[in-house]
Length: 437
Ligand code: HEM
Image (cartoon, rainbow, N blue to C red; front, side):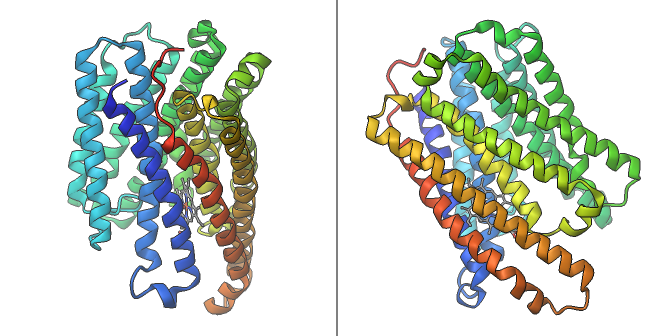
């Protein structure tokens, strides 16, 4: 493993740290605008927080893929050079993003609200990643490599699509621009899910030692289902735009298949691994078990949110935020921490530190549960009042929602401590000398 790759994975973990800290400050700024508005208002902290969060997930996934790819092709100098260029350019651009944010330079579009010229080095970096991943890739490559490859290609496509607003034609019509933005952001989630699902399968193959899993029918089924999903699952992101009803129904059906992939992968972890193997990789396994819990919780929420009678109340409320954070923290981050924990051989830490991590996983689950439920209940009350009491003054409406924002913030502080402890211990742990299992 190259030193740059090691540094890159630690850099991704520090982005997770940033997401946690700025997330808590943003929620306090939302509660006490009079104290924050003059120096760091919520509307400036929010983009900073979401950039930290999205860059953590995308960088974490890309860094782990480069790490495993390097193990699969240890003597490929061109791969190492191209992936190093990707990593260095990507990290420097992310640093530039946060420097711009701290200098109050904003721009771009939602989730990418930095000066748009920075999209050029990001795009260039991703092209180097794409080139390096193509190396050694052929039609007989394992299903997880196909997942990495298609995830990376579709990120490239959706990232470009997300930038189409630079062309005047897309800005001429508000509906046109919003449709493309929502569609691009929705598909981008599918792209990083595909990369992360590939990593989960690779982890399963590695821990179980059963290489047949890499090319089994079931794994290829998951690959094709993932591909189908990342191409079409964005439909649920444009529910609220003018559309034919049958399109909404198709979009709903497609989105639901995403849960099948996650459930099948996680069930495989439970069924395929012997007790001995689970014990030897106890902490990565615990992260996967946590992701399982959040798959079911978010599946339940997604099923409810998609019922039109309920969607009428939930749209544009904190329920959407609960769905976004429930999946990015509970599922994406937990799986990435399982993979990074495996790379770091986190199970070789002292018993005391392992106990701290296991307790922190439990504490994260509990505090994230309160965090998530507070957003849902607050969102339901807001949605109900907006629809049924349209004349209610906004201040009075927010008074009813505020206790839930308060409990969300309090639980968020616990998430910061518990997930922050895990991140800190991961950041401190040196990479093992022997990388092959
Ligand atoms: C792993 C850590 C985290 C990740 C990956 C994450 C991810 C996200 C994402 C994707 C959004 C955008 C939601 C949307 O557009 O609907 C968001 C918004 C937000 N997050 Fe987080 N988050 C994390 C931790 C936290 C923590 C610990 C807090 C503390 C309370 C927090 C507070 C917020 C707030 C206040 C918003 C804005 C909500 C709004 O616009 O109404 N986040 N987060």
